[in-house]
Image (cartoon, rainbow, N blue to C red; front, side, top):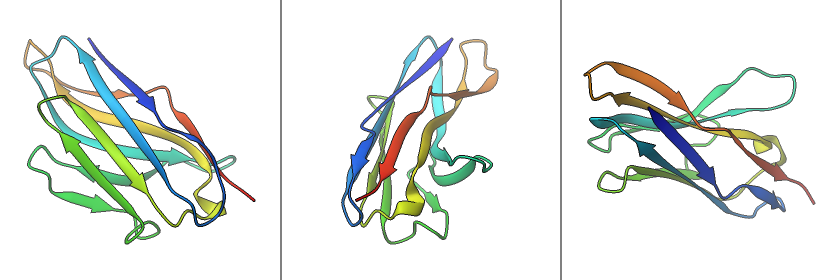
Length: 120
C-alpha cells in the first residue's frame, strides 16, 4: 500500500512563491510517473505538471514558465516550485503517483490535497 503525504500549501499574495512537497511511503517496488493536479471550487481537477522517473516533464500551459516540478528518486519525493503566483492558481493541489506494487501491479495513488490560496 502506498501513501502520499503533501506539505507546503498556504496563503500567499499575488506574485509570491510557494513550494509544495510530496513524499511516497509504504511498501512498493518503484514509483513511476509523479505529478501535481489541482481543483478549484466548481471546476474539474486538472493536471498542473508531471515528471517521469527519468525526469522528463510536462506542464499545463497556464503554469509554464512559472512552476517547476522536480523529484528525488532516492527519497521518492516530488516537489512543485510555484513562482509568480496568480489568484487563478488558487485551488486544492493534489500529489499523484503511478506506483508499481510488490506484486508488480501498477496503481495510481493520490495525496489528501493541500490548499493554495493566492490573495491580497
